[in-house]
Image (tube, rainbow, N blue to C red):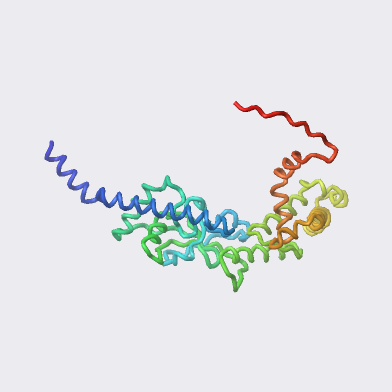
Length: 297
């Protein structure tokens, strides 16, 4: 019995990495994780984004066509800029942000370092860029090992229009959004926020479906339902222009010169709850404030 156990241990040790290799791989993960956290902190202070782009947020700018399988390809890792469902676990350089990934990442890293065969990752191609559906750890370990390419099964989501010139992935998708918005509305609005044009389309759709109190007058004129063209015009005149005028008169643009009026409009809408709560703490000039003595325990 003891001889059989010794033979099994020998066979097991041949296939499994040694404890020293496992320790080195975990140590490597810890170093990369610290690097990722520090980069996240520093770049947030400089107002730069280093996150993986979420594919679901960009799905609405894509036509409703079928996916096209493009087979196994060699893909530059630098072109992989987003994820379908794990964009919070890794940053844009695929440095690990989540400490819970440590042991799994270490195991995959050992296999990559020893050039063991691994299944191809699964990527979704949108325009010139790729999003990860499966294989985040393999890409992270490959990039950490200095590799520039990865074998991938590629599924392509087609775009009806894409820009010829762009400065970054964010700029690429922002231009696609802007083109879609202008094609659907014809409005001369400009926002610098990625996802901003999609949010504006949501607001117009809300106006069209009578979810907006400002659409009552337009509903009376269109009892059978508000056509899209009328919804665009009604939203712009009854919702956007009034709010934009209030923003211009408030002096916000002087304080935030880098942002457009539409940027500030979207910011106010997304923070309206917090602004209302904040207003509750601003007393009127006639109000008498009674100060109670503080008690210290």
